[in-house]
Length: 206
Image (cartoon, rainbow, N blue to C red):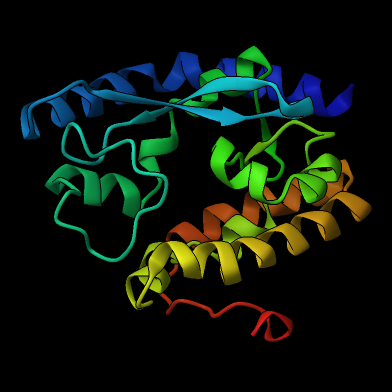
């Protein structure tokens, strides 16, 4: 109850305060390239319920529905690169949090294709609401660069990165509490503005 109360109160306040900024960035997205300002994608949430995840569009229209993004892809727009760098493209997910589809902290929601490949693992993970951030998100904040360096990005994601994310998510779930969630939020904000190099998967995954 404390976690959900925090999610409702903070996401509601953030939406009230940040809607002018979100609107401004949505206009920039529209002016930068043809297509809608927002990108919606079906993700799998708590108890395997499907929901629409909101983002500011960061790719050229028609390519923004890709399941993974690798490297400095040409389909990423100019404003999209900026939005991704500072995670501004994820601000519309405040609405997902307010509505109860997501939480501020929890395992990142995946698309159905990947969830089905690891369904037995997600039986445990999807007992909770997915989140905007979690320990795996912090570790893999440079995921696109790691995938860009792989010969086969999809194979590398499903064979190396996603299994490691699942492992990290399970570890988080076994020790999660409100204080730890607050620490993860602070770590996420700090990581956004920290310039560092991509971190490879855990040694156990190699």
